Image (cartoon, rainbow, N blue to C red):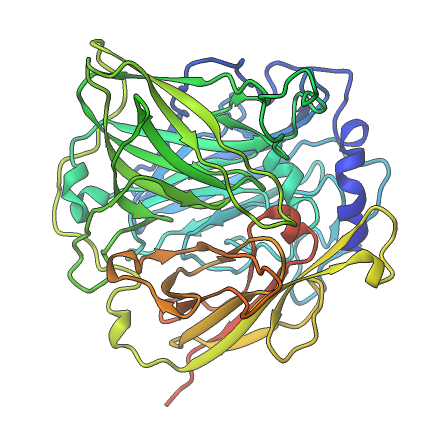
Length: 545
């Protein structure tokens, strides 16, 4: 039934879930194009706790696109949740989306695993705390069976481990079958775990800039024509920068205002559902060095047991949907005439979405001081780190998984669904994700496993693991250089050209932490995840010796 929900969701969201004629500016408000990139509002923990209420809301913009958002009862949209290792986040989530009056439903749980409502509809919601190494149990980061339906309130309680890496994480809906439209609708926000200045002292005291890139349905579909020969390829999706839209075909840049000659600490998230980014900062046509200090929430070089990070200099950064990068950037001086944040074109394969090169934001420097908050100075030695010293651990299992796509004409797919999407454990029968199925992989707490993930399709896929991170060891059989062997929760696997070996990555999975239970891995191109490219892993309690 999830397949049916996915087929119809994007075509009937407007009218069933949202009052299409009623535009409420106070619900999921969005800025105009070419506006200033403002910092999201902050909510800080106090005394080891952060408690808040979220309403899940929807409306329709002037172009007829359905918007979604998490808002506090007093109207704060997508606040940044600022917490520390050891804190507890309590969220009272109320689904205020109008109940679907039509459309399919599906029972996604039974009496043993029910969490919230057991029946999914087109108006259901839940929350995923992306990248956080927290419990997948009910009322935690449980994304398989948790369903909050219209009018219902559900409580999340997320206890952040004391060894959680300090860095950038994020939250978003994760109801299988309708995750992509909810994320494209904008129901996303950042989580920042504090303390990175103790591991990466170069960022201490710097102004901090949070940038969230999202995608959304095209505003100007059909704009590409013979009268606009220089527009370039039409993307599958528009993007926005902190909700400031950058629509095709002219890509009017969002505006980032800064102070000349300073250095800033940027925390940038690709919170798009489907859009892949290859980020670059360009001053007067020259790519600038981004001093990378964190990837996917983990300080670079910090997990070797020394608890001190390293800086990795990059001129561009591939950022799949859901990935984050944190870097130090020198702001333009008076000698710089033009400065831009851009994404380079993505070569995603013949079956992929189109992700062309485009400008995202113009960086405008002046002598005026910015109003950015500054990071703290170093406050003490860093906490023990979650994944440290993995190189000396014994590998307990090796597995091979692969991405697979099957054209609908090769199956009994209804009209309008051209492709089935799978992620398969080698040796098992390909199967679309079903929340009622048994786990595809079973392991034990304390395990250390090496996984090879192949891509047997003609487009790139973005491997994402819930609950833990993984260390990238090899790409296409070639060892990754030491300074690039970072801990990630999402990583791209290149596309197959139809000849030779399948593109692949080899990663090390660390199950030595406290997490036990069922959780998922999937492609984080959410149209693919909604289409079935997801599976469950079960981590059982550690075996007694």
